[in-house]
Amino acid sequence: MLLYLEGKAQQISFRTEYIGNSGYYYLPPGEKPREKIGNSKGSAMIYQGAVSIPLSVKMNEKNRPTAWGLGFGGAYVSLKNQNFSEQMVSEIMNIQLGVYHLRPLNDRWSMRASLGAGIFAPTTNFSKLSFKNVLGSGGLVFIRHLKPNLDIGGGVSVNSSLGYPMIFPAVYVKWKLHGKFDVNVEVIEGLELSAGYDFNERFKLSYAIEMNGQVALLKKDGKDVIFSHQYIVTGFRPELKLGKTGLTMTGMVGLNLYRPASYSNRTLKGVFASDNDYFFSVSPYASVGLKMKL
Image (tube, rainbow, N blue to C red):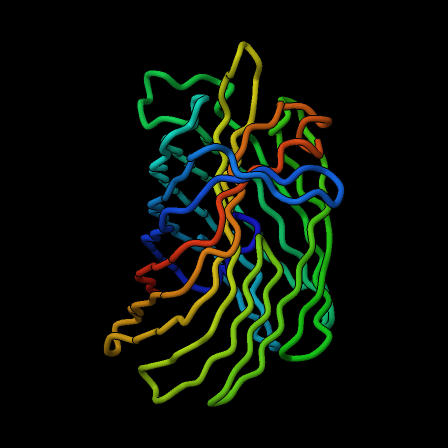
């Protein structure tokens, strides 16, 4: 999140999401069919917020910023799990804080960098937190401005999710088709695809696909493990601008297509293991949120 904040203006956003009840399955390696895990099932409520505070912004003749700023983000997940034979995480708290820097390198290239830290825990009780719930992160992405509406880039991201710094590839794609009918493709942190129509200057309706997720670090059976909760959702997304305040109300009604939720050992082998593909099946999805640019 910290690597990809726009940095041109102060931004505040908040969203509440509901993922309906569905069964829990295991997908074996290879081409074997999925297996239902008893009568296990679950739903989720997610609350997310983010704030971007530019500390210094200077625009060039191409309207690209050189900026330093602070980013803060948080998420709380309540997992309503039922009929599980083994203990499952029932709540997740993620809090992130960091500094970001944006800079054009020339007419065709820009650079984005970030450095931060966060708390990723299976509880909101701060007295139960330890240093093992803290992750450091950073990233550096170089962006090529191919067209006024198309940016493609790549670089590296670093985090300490395995207990020591690890380098991972980072991909950046942003493409927009403007007008009454617009298309937006973003592969930045996660995925967002949308096609929308502006009915007027205040109301827009899009059909979108989004991917998001949260993580908790904990001990299970005496081992350090990662509990990962992700979801891919799709549906109709209305956006209503509330006057000239810069405040926009958003929502989405549709389906959760795929919601992996499972433990993996906090090792490189554990993260990429092929035997931890556990997921909740298709279920209803709805969200409502507010975002403001100041």
